Length: 180
Image (cartoon, rainbow, N blue to C red):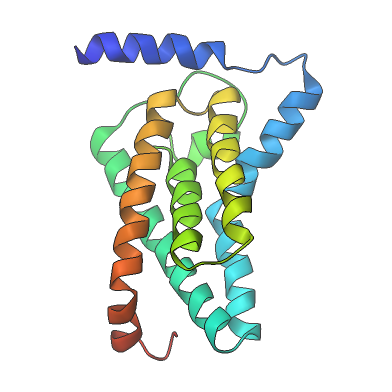
């Protein structure tokens, strides 16, 4: 059963690959694929945390902490499951630093952030991230660094982590008041 699912996953993922010749689509996909990088988000949220007070200071701390947790949790799952990334040349840095593809950390992070900003009622940011999250996730498949199943699992895990972090938010504020 699992082998059949993986064969279908390989075929469907291969159909979504953007050909090398299509420079415009590959550039757009690369932009979205990189826009979900954890360092980018943590750095931006750290700047907001330093500059803001009150709500935005606490929100930046929650989102950054969630990203750090998510990245560590996903890495542990990847090294436990050890599914190899699809063959390809794009994303050399990802292939060297993290040869495993399941689940997609970018999909987890993008979905988690979208769900969290909805939970925090951050309009219109929630609408923007709701559109952005699938673009990041599918760009990873289109560029050949993930399979569709990696992304689907990432979305489910992203929802789970987001809901958990939002529920634990008051506890974090109580235990780590200096961060919030």
